[in-house]
Image (cartoon, rainbow, N blue to C red; front, side):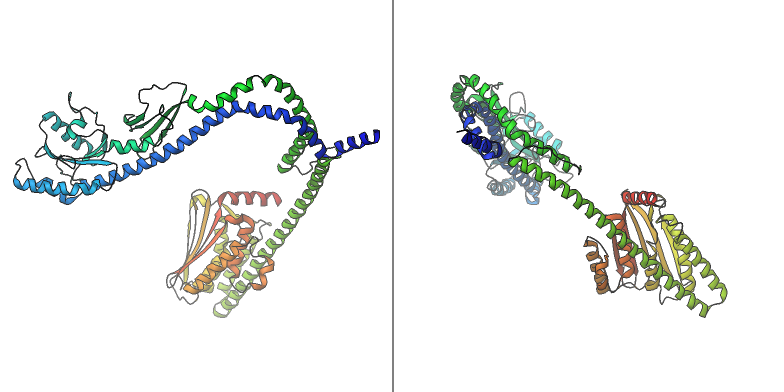
Length: 600
């Protein structure tokens, strides 16, 4: 018996499944009670879900109304801007003749075509100010007798200008007459002046009335019950149409949902009694009151057992994971458990140790790779330039006296003196231009001053630090490929500025023969491929590189120092010249300068 008991105890302490079974057996009854207790919470959930469903339904209906309003406004624009209708209105004056009847009949024949386009339009009416007559699809023609009504309509046409306004049928025109009475409409109407595009327009007025029944038909489908209410309000808060229990006042016991339109500024509002939502849940609520007291004590005991047996190690493990994710690589979670949770925590500790080693090894490997490639890229520049310079001195020695050669040597020495300036890796743009000037002077002597150099350096970019020798390959290409063959008139422009206070833009432009379209596409394609590589211009790709050494070198150094935000672009027009532009992130330039200063 004792052996069996010991076996059960061991299984319970070492097997999470056995422990969970025991817990579930104990918690079964409280779960039933708690599920009933959840009915109270379900009331709030039911309310919020009802609000969400109502908002979705009202939003859909509001979108429908917006589309209808937009369509009606477009129809009004077509009518008010119709040259044929406006011409007939303008040519008829106070003297109403037989020809006026013919003209107005033609207008009356045209208006129903616009009514049929939108099902929400009940009638279209045009007020002709000269003859003081209405032309309506609803009742044909009618003369307006009251002078106050005439003044109100004329003032409305002048006040609107080319704009649109909405008028309720209940809006007073005079002390005894409303707008709906003079236009025979029971809903809201759109009014605007006719002859939109004529600055000397007459005070003719277009009235497009909405169908109240059609608006109500859409709103009635949204009513959840007979005691609820839905109202359509205009931008001034006036009720356009309303359906449902319209005489009921809103109280705190009612659910009120309102959706506003961004287009028309109209609103849809629905009011429903909360008691209608809770009809079913109120019955279940009665059963929970009697058993709440009994469930509290048992719920506390079970929750403590679950926490001490299961939740505590999970919580401890989750805290360890959070510390590891925040960068604390030396994390170790202590545990004395021998069950599945103990195995899980021990596995986590091993994983944390392995991750620490992997990260350290990866960072060191990446650092060595970056350092090696950076040294390789920098080593490509000095020999390349040195060979070109020695070649220039050689040709100058053959074509000129020793004075020119002397000047070339002096400029060359200054160039190298600045290049090797106490191991500095960063120069300001202003220092880089001075550095370039010595090189450019050598090349001008070589090419017998057949080209000139202009500097367009903005003041705000002069102090920006950049990598040394970053511009020299670009200038070298501009001279070798742009100035070669020119006897005079050559021009190289070096410019820099700061764009949008975050990007340093430096360009080298020449007026040489330019690059052919096919060659230019090839160059741009190669640079795009190199820009897309994770490690640009890496040594593993050198065997495939056959040309564009200078551009590849510049782009490779930019990527290693400034990251993926650094860009290099080549543009050229045959017969006009070539422009090479580099884009460097300003903040990164300052960070790189600070890092290189500390390392040196």
